[in-house]
Structure formats: structure tokens, C-alpha cells
Image (cartoon, rainbow, N blue to C red; front, top):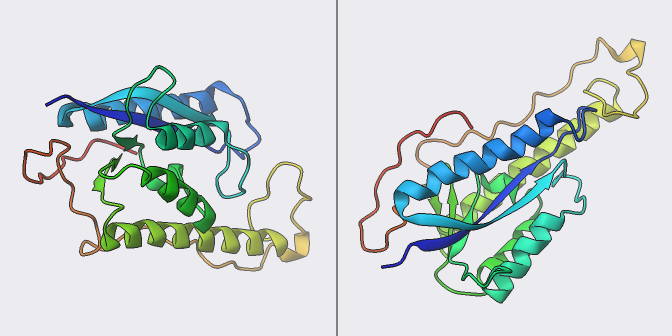
Length: 210
């Protein structure tokens, strides 16, 4: 049985005012290195890497790497003619953080049956109701976090982005709601599976810091 051909995607949004720095570049390189550790022991191989450096998914900024990945999924081949059996990334929120992005990805991902999405926590079965529910839950959490951050910035209490007006002195005593947590209960976490279709699902070891 041949190794699964997976395409990798890495993204980082550097909104701290240090755009295009070596630190930002190191972020996407670290993601690709982690992706290699995720797929290689499981019988998968990365046949193409797509990257969006300094691109925010929350703000729906243009993402050339993401668009190219979707095109490869629709065509079922990379630019060099490799078939596409699935996608690998460190976490689903690297790919989609809004409902529209999730639907765009699903349309391309499901254009060929049987594909897999591999993340650090394991395999995500987007063809199942449970897998879709987990993906949608992550999107909902991201949307809520964005709403809370925007409300805090509008009130002058939250962290401001470069170019925004300084925080008002009279607003420093105000309190803002804590950001929503993305932690999932142990009962709602996905059960990791092996990439080898011939083997039964197997647990995945912790692969280090995300």
C-alpha cells in the first residue's frame, strides 16, 4: 500500500507590529516541522507545502496559500502531478476561523471522497457528523473570541493593533471579559486514528508544544 499523499498548510498572523520579521518566519517553519512529525510515523508523506505568513484568518485577509490549497483539492493534484489524499496542519484554526472559510474548505476537501484531515491531536473525520460538529465548534469559539476582542478595543480596554488610537486614560480601570477558552472536555475530544487504513485506530502520543 502506497504512502498517503498529504498537502501541508501553515499560517501565522503576526499583528504585533513585527510583520515580516525573522520571528514571524520562524513561526511557519516551526509549524511545517511539526507537521512532518505528525504524518511521517503514521505512513503519510508531505507532497506539497502551502504557507500564508503574516495572514490573519479572523479578518478574512487574502490568503494566496489557502486559495492554492483549495485549488489543489479541487483538481486532486499538486502542481507537479501528485494526487491529494488529504491535508495536514497543526490545528484546524490554521485553515478556517469563520463559517464561510469552513464551508469553502469543506467543498474543496469533499470534492473527492475518503480524504483525511490530520492535525496534532489526530485525524479529523469531516465526513462524519461528529467531526463536522467539532470543526464548527472551533469556528464558533474563534468568532466569539474576535467579538470579545473587538468589544474590548472599542471600549479602550483591550490590546490595540498598530495604527489604532492609544487607550484612553479614563478607560484603564474598566474590566473586560476574559477570552473564551478553546479547551475541550475530555469527552468531546476526537479519538485519534492511524493513517494506515489497514490498522485499527491507535492513540497518538503527545508531540510536544504546539
